Image (cartoon, rainbow, N blue to C red; front, top):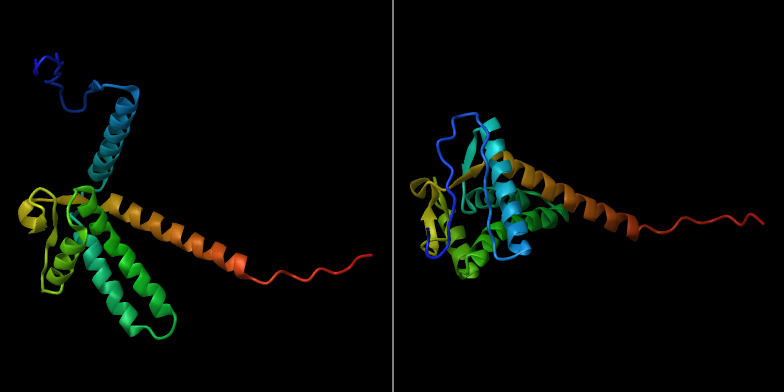
Length: 180
C-alpha cells in the first residue's frame, strides 16, 4: 500500500527471464504517455546493451561539438561559414531545451556552460537537480553513444532535406515548348 493505493511489485526475476510491467494511470492518455516513455527507455537500454559506449550527458556532447564546429566556421571562407555557424548554434539548442524542460533559466545556464567549455578538459553540463552547471563525470550523468549518434544523424539528414527542398523551390522553372 502506498497511501490509499494498492500496488503490485514483481521481483525475483532471473537474468534472461521475461517479466511483466504493470502500468496504472488516471486516464488512457496518461497510460499511453507512460507506455511510450517506458518503450523509449527500454529501447535506449537495449541499444546501450548492444553498444556499451556512453557519453557524458547534460548537454556536454553538444557543447563540445558546438565548440569544434564553431572553430571550423571561423576557418571557412565565404557563405559556407554562415551555414556551419548556424549548425553550431543548433547544437547549443539542446542544452537550452534541457534547461527549459527543467523549468530553469536557459539563457543564463547556457551562457555559463559556454564559458565553462572554453576551459581545458571541461566536463560541464546542465545539472537539472541543482539548477546549475555541474561536472557530469562527478555527477555520473551519461547517455548512450548509439542513441546520441542516431539523433545527430537524423537531425542533420532532416536539415539537409529541408535545404534541398528550398533549393528545388528557388530554381527557375524550365521553359516549355509550344507543341501546337
